[in-house]
Image 1: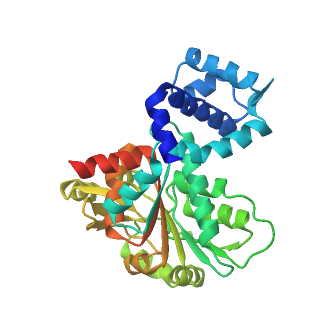
Image 2: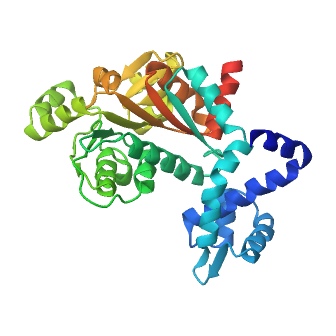
Image 3: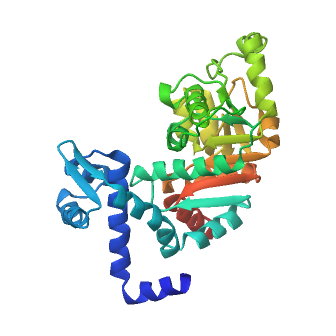
Amino acid sequence: MERMMNHLRKLTPEMLVLIEKRYSILKNIYYYQPIGRRLLADRMNISERIVRKDLSFLKEQRLIDITAAGMEVNSEGLELIDELQDFIKVFKGLHQLESRVKEILGIDAVLVVPGNVDEDLSVKKDMGKAAAAVIRKEMKDDSIIAVSGGSTLAEVARQMPDLYGEHSIEVIPARGGLGEVVEYQANTIAADLAGKIGGRYRLLYVPDNLSREALEKIKTEPAVEEVVAGIKKADILIFGIGRAEDMGERRGLPFEVMERIRSENAAGEALGFYFDINGNIVYTSTSIGLNLEDYGNIPRAVAVAGGAKKARAIMAASFFRKRTLLVTDEGGAREIVRLDSM
């Protein structure tokens, strides 16, 4: 198949570009349906005039339906989306890209989805879907799954299919922290993911950046002790990665800490740990939950982060923990390769 793709790239490169564009349009309609033409163009950051012709084609091919509420992908369109996923990966050389990023980072495995979340927000849903598939493969009946917060991890929970029946799997927040939007908090994500899996969940209501005296008092609470004990027994960790300065501001770190993060060139943040580009810890935020030893000891870690803008952050966090499976997008992966070649 790869040889055939090389021939097609040489003979009809414009055809393959058109396939990718129409695949992206179809996928965006599916994720946001029902959706109008103008909103679709806005979400994809392209003009309404450009998208109009492709929508007419998709309608003629009976891949989408148009209702009063907007456009929707029908069963034939959904089947085509599923079947085109592997074709697009091979066409864009993403399997080779996965191998190259894995080699650069020195981690266990890399999964790359097409696109760049910086340009197309639906790519975050693709990363969530890919990460959910990894979790289903890795989890066992007695697994304890620790999850971090953030919009990308919220998408992982949303894209997890309903696994009907009851399971003894437990999902717990990896760290405390109540400063984010409710649906992006680790507590919410743990509950949502457990609901999809059919497992149990525990909650950890502890804000970030409390004083050490306050943290010591809270640690003795039985409910908190139970969750912390569960984190130490977790066999799967799922976490997001952010840019250090962005995450410091979002968490409301004090001015002097922000200055330290900047002066020591922190590039990435994961689970409250701030890393420089070489994977050295620059700063650790005060919170209850997963500590540095736990971070290194959990057998399987799945990091989910994408976008070219996060490439340095992904590299920083990955260099710290090598036993990691990274789910990222094409934009982040290609930027990692570019940075490595500089």
